Image (cartoon, rainbow, N blue to C red; front, side):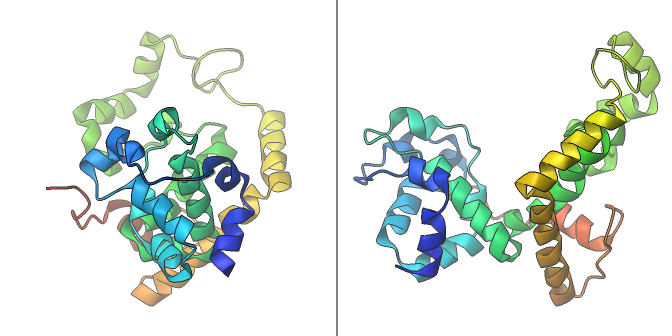
Length: 237
């Protein structure tokens, strides 16, 4: 077997997610992503079962593996008990580990996610801390989000939140002890090393594209490119 397929075999999600596909297409029929994107879980599983290294490599570099929303609809319908979404998880991890994610528009967004949600977890204890979400980066939220940020204390009081304060409640302050424990989990599980891997490959891609790479933060051209660039070539017509 080839190197890439062997890496897939080492991932428990791949082992649990692919038993024996008979190429019936039920997963594609039920898949919400397949309705809107250039995405076909049946084709992906068929490609993996072929063990063709070139085709697997093409998947790792493609937009395709980033369209799955992980809704697990495929799991509920497969007559063979497969879960293509778990195969997608394994493919995504390998793509990130080996740096192929930077070759696709949607894949490169993993760098932006790491710099935002990923770092928010360690800094604040929340995936999406309301008070650090920049309205300019989320125009889809409309004017409400900008108003909320500008009037945050008033809004949080009306919502009976407990922002930055001790005790129970939404957006409560996470203790230094809890944050330290959270970071230790990231260290032991290898998540911090994984973060460094994302940064390393993103740095190489930035140099290749002629962007100056900033080691921290989101106020730089490469982050903005990864976050905002959209070829508008993902949806089915």
